[in-house]
Length: 309
Image 1 (tube, helix red, strand yellow):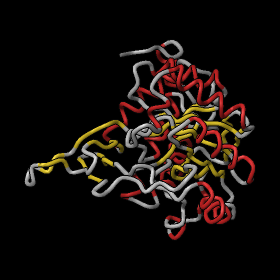
Image 2 (image 1 turned 180 degrees about the vertical axis):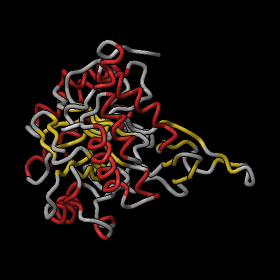
Image 3 (image 1 turned 135 degrees about the horizontal axis):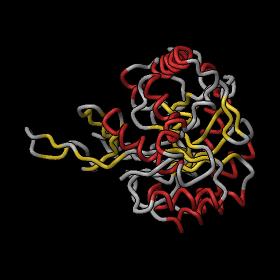
Image 4 (image 1 turned 180 degrees about the horizontal axis):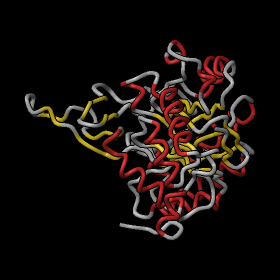
């Protein structure tokens, strides 16, 4: 089950998605976090962020709308309180980094690179819930290139760029971040959506719009992974509605080298462990000897990765 994302080696391809796992403490009461291929912790910024006011979660048919707003205690508190605890587990620690300026991304990434114990940095270029952050830096190829390049010049850490599906030129942004120094791409973040409380005649979320995740977006996320893999050579981490081993297999067959479980955690705290087990069973039943042998196999059916729109 071991996979290699360039120079980042994972014991298996099942990760947890940023924003859904916190810093792991709650889930560690349910299973040994060392079973995971990696843990992507919730976003970290230079200084503490309060997040958006409640209500900021809304369940929908087949999914979840969130507008958390990147609430976090800041990088210094993370390094002091959370990272030492995470280091006890035999799994890759990936830290999602966000900010409202290029300088903030660079500074947080530099701090994380210097403390040790962080296997990779995931640059959040896609959060739709904070004005002037996340998606503001990944909306077009030039902006995304400039930010990733600045971080690349400031750190030797393994860099992952997390992209939004809501951009005019997804393939262009993917090529830009790869050229700038991203060694892997996470795809995808949430899709913007809205929930209305018909009884109270008002939007459910305090911010009106939120990010939709869960099974409802899986076909869209698969499409994004397919498109991105057709545009770049670097590994892709697929996410968006992964809740079973078959889901994981579909993302891998589309071109992902690893997958991340997110919203499913709110339904089943053991979801990542179950997904890993089911993926193993899927592979054994079909005679697949390695995950790497599955990556992108579905693309061969259309001549090596044809595009459809």
